[in-house]
Length: 213
Image 1 (tube, rainbow, N blue to C red):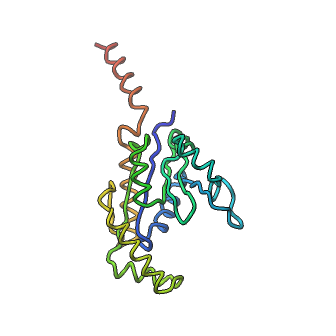
Image 2: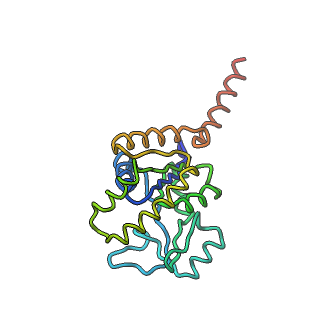
């Protein structure tokens, strides 16, 4: 048995709040943190590898997996199903690895309500201001004004659910937010429920105590 049980780390934010950058920094800080590979019913795109980019399912396979409770969370988006397979996540956390999820508030809620909910750490990233969020989206120079407006509306929908997360950070300084994330993860790894070896250690202490008294 691993010295500790891994965490399901949910990192959510509106688009443009720095989630992708911080996720990469967490992986650089601790390469043992693994990304959750999602399942999808959409067709693979050129260059995508099954099991690496996504787990590619047929629609009947996906629906069966949901029915058999083999998905921690799932959603229907733009005509395709997406979800997080339970098996690889359970294997990872039982071996002491943390699993990082890039999902929205609805997926986060499903995982919190799953059988692995007690091992979940959820963190939401807020932008310093709505103006700054718009500036970041516009600076990408990837979308037209109408698309940016849709992204802004979706971002506000995401922000409105900030209260359902364990921790909420305002990402107005990337380095400070990174440091806070590391502190939160380090502390949560030390929670009693994440350290299964403690029970055996206390039993050994009890046996030693009884022997000496």
